[in-house]
Image 1 (tube, rainbow, N blue to C red):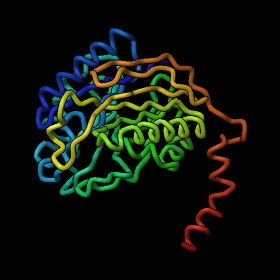
Image 2 (cartoon, one colour; image 1 turned 180 degrees about the vertical axis):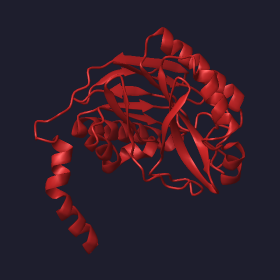
Image 3 (cartoon, rainbow, N blue to C red; image 1 turned 45 degrees about the vertical axis):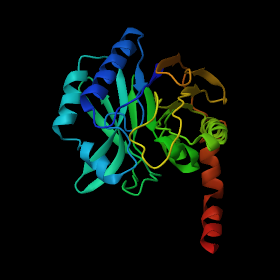
Length: 275
């Protein structure tokens, strides 16, 4: 199985331009025989920090924008994951679409959305492709134990984590170190490959109005032993992929993370209720 990520810079409100980058990325993925490729968080719409602006470019899964996305990507062999601001009735979600040959296989919505205008997702679906079971978390979701564990409990062997990072310079190194530590932990404790699929910002990120930061990139694929098998260059658009050999840890009967949840979950709940 060959998996990858397109580390790209999206533009707020430029659906046509962002879609063209998806098409170019899929052309490369097909050429490199990549089976599954990821694009960044909210890539199709941009990721503004203002709710009114976010709604202007958001669209629903049955919208003309989605139909155009499905139609124009139908010729490609590679399955892909791409983010957008999703309108669902009156609510706005930070969502990733999972698409293959013109078919929307499903969506995942961020469960730890920290923008107040986003609703929290609470569904954790897994998907199958060519014998591989995989799931999706989005950005900060990977910093928590349970989202990845819920996917692993359903048999996920790879977890894709599309990101949008625009980090203040003062906290950049601390963010870099903590994110890598989180993702290494998720890979090891669940015995999965973990794909950190970041964006990159070429110059100032115009959609972020309330802070000044750096979108540095640093996408990578971590194996179940916690080793980075490939990573992108920083501060530039890039394309990465790796050949993987998915495994399922059954050394503890159900895998270490799942065994831990089963053995200690009730005690954890009891302790949390005392707080």
